[in-house]
Image (cartoon, rainbow over the protein chains, first blue to last red):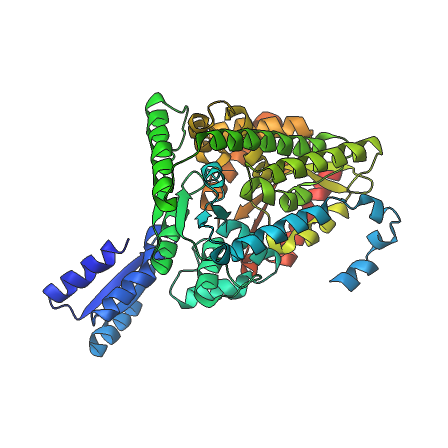
Length: 75
Length: 416
């Protein structure tokens, strides 16, 4: 039931990951329902997360750049 | 709300008391007792299973497990106008707003003990059937993690043209697996004599529910879709019990009496409409009064008919086997072409002047295809359609002024 969460925290520790980016396609049920628990598994493993919600097209490049830069600075 | 109601023109209607459905009181009593029993399961030592609205409940009844329906609870949340707050709570946990509002409000109630009845009784195990949507599988996984209880998934393949022999074998194998799962969870064997009895009661209850809904075909209708939304709770939650059979027999008899006495639910019924999709639970009264102010009555609906539509596939004598047919071919687990045939049947039976479709932001499988169905209904049946964009529980997706304008405009076209 929580195999995905365990898998993510395992690869995060094996590969010494500092941060993870969730790309969530709006209206996608499977990812939408899994996001809160996957996020909590990663946070428990000490991995910072960034959520990026996208619709049929990506947000503007400038907006993405700012969000990614802020996230990397935070790490 | 109550005081403004009294000031509306309908209040001058001296027949209002006569129009009230007397069985309502009995129904409330049954549902209250049901929830008291479910909430007290821990003390009485009974097992509780959460199950999806389209799931096969009969084996649970036969095993003396109390079935609890998060979707019925979701409807209560909506009717209590607590949906937006609870949905927002789930969104704070990280669940996106695009997810089903039943799921969001249920997840919030589980975590906070909030909602109209202070949360549902905790499940001993979960039963999820994906004949109504794929959403329930992920939703029930959330519940399974939250409560640390096992989850049984019954996978019912979508029927595009026909329910193939391979698909039938596939579903039937899972039904036997379901029985074994229950035997493991309950630590006892299935009593097949009891199962047969429950199956017989389920068939009878389902047929009686059909007869209740059929009353809406009478002109004027003694019963509306809004009444069906209220009275459906038993066919969903307690299918396969004597209580349900007795209640729907009483309700059907009351409907027949109303027909004999010429009691119409909407005074001066002029226009007959059919409703599609789930109710807008927090606005049923407003909508019912809005349509009634135009002399329009919603005489039937595709939603509550989904439970009675299982009847032709059910067999009392080989109930478990017939469940694979009955549960796989429910209204929204079939193609738009098959849905259109059901819709055509209802439009003809209820002899309606128009179709009102609730494009429900929460229910993707029900709402996807509505625009196509609208075209088919117009092309093949020359019937006007109104589409209302809203949500079954989350009031934030309901715009009163926009909906009112659309209803008024639609009614003008019917009148002209």
